[in-house]
Length: 481
Image (cartoon, rainbow, N blue to C red; front, top):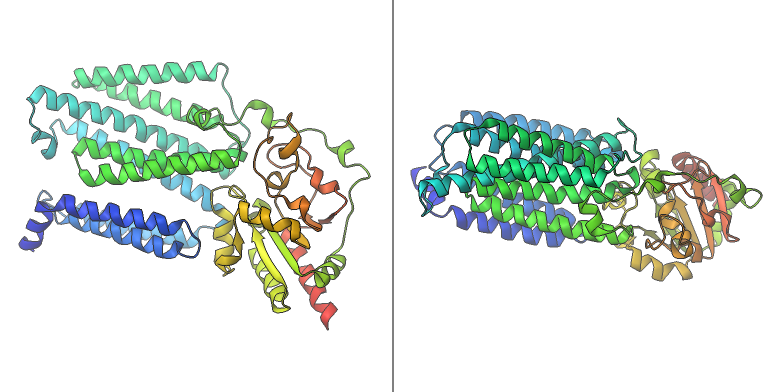
């Protein structure tokens, strides 16, 4: 054991470097649904290396509390992962991000209250005053980032769980208030760095950072939660990285920087997919108030909608050769992925070419639809990206839209006065026949009508996704018997 502890202490940074390398390759594998599981396992192995190297470090004097924490945390994590409903995965991710930021802030607070510098900081080649300024500056930064991450993620969780309204809650002069809060945080951080004996400066940072986190996230509507989740993934990484500077722990710094950068890249991709301003997202200006206003669509649809029945849909599918299934958040709400799989299996058994056209922000988080479909063993090569789908749709005989709305709304292409204008969409309306399975003509999150529903090639099947798909399957099988 002494030998292992010596090795872990001497080469701790090398082990952390291996962790980062495993994370990088894990992230690379996560870019494909086919290799995502391997990516998860590789990243988990990298984390195991980091944990082992840390636990074997000579500086650890007692393992009692560590073991208790590992056991309790592992039990909660495993039970939660198995118990969480697939519809709740977005809010589950949000709350995990929040816990990550909260833990970083709490550790920094505890380290500050101990009143002594961490071992690695004491080894810096500076005088004591400079070391103390560095440490307290790092603590201030970590408390700031960690606190914003915690409260912002908690608001995102509450909105997704519908504990509070999903509509934007915008304070008057929000940007000015946020700016003043940020200035206040900077002032308290400088004061804490110079006068660490005054604990009120630390409390000031925590209070103002909490208010800023709440203000930034409450102003965001439910439609933009995929972007918010991506952003807080980045913030959770940054909070871990800033905690690394508190202890001068190279592993935390490297991993935090990696996760933070990856989260920002993902946020940028999500912003492009939803036609949002990336820099506006960083300031909490994601959803302007007008996006929450719902237009009266009664006149828009009056006398123009063509309804259909499961029997008629089955007859259309029988004569089709290529079929696209377009999943949306309604699929997750109805837990209809099993019904979609059964219909897919029956159609492919008859030699029909079936694929899934997936918009990157369909659902409540990046990859939400991919996770749902992977859960029911839909082949990875049948999950098509936005670009791939739009190449295929013009030559597709039938497109079945299940619970999607804004991501298939043609207004995004030509209606400049709508909140979704410029947003990349799935060109479902270019398929030869479109079947939309929807409970009603209610608008999506953008609050605008959808011209797809009144197109000449569109038929509306008004039903819940799960029973609607099951009835189509039953009728389809009946045609063959």
